[in-house]
Length: 72
Image 1 (cartoon, one colour):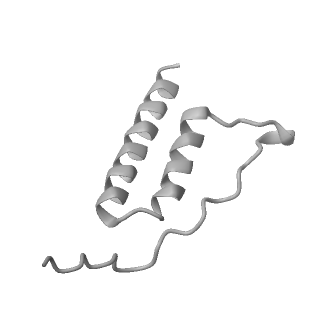
Image 2: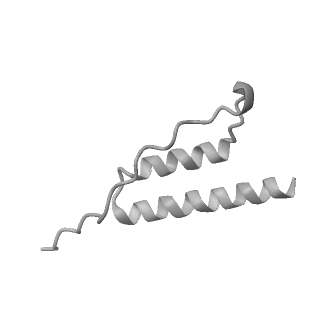
């Protein structure tokens, strides 16, 4: 019989911050960033190992997105 996996230590991440609509109510959302934020929020319901994978994927998406913005 295997021992149960220990739960995460420390607080769980809270909900993502409210969405910023930009200057004068303009929507400046970027689809890749929105998807990464949703993935991070959804990771709270996963097990610790799966959370890490989700956070790493979101981090990579954000790095790539920022790199493309910097090149523009």
